[in-house]
Image (cartoon, rainbow over all chains, first blue to last red; front, side, top):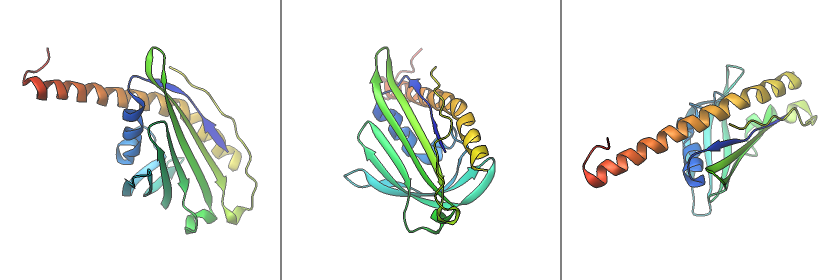
Length: 134
Length: 45
């Protein structure tokens, strides 16, 4: 299942991606992100990890570990870390692409995809995407 | 179940994107104001 959207933001791509990287702050916009247990720390190549509790349809989910990759300053990817027990239930990848947009500072494109984990077999399929522009 | 979750995920996206844009724009505006105050020592009118 996958969901996409676009929005225009009056801010530089760097400001947008830095804002999202602070997941404790990003939670205000995305209720699927619960309390952050270990915030993102990136190395010089923009690679790092984060641990946080999720929320699915309002229900708290176990703390998950996700790999983070920041391609400065146009793309941010969060991927379910391999070898973590939560991969048995769900796999997740979320990307935010950000580019300058004429008349606005940034155009942001988030794509969030969740697929059933190993315990469910592999029945992933794309779900309805939806574009949303302000 | 997967389909329900997929619909829920897709259904929440527009609201999240609007909130995200509003929050970032507010923060950027506030920081710009703070920067101006720090530089000049004068609150912008």
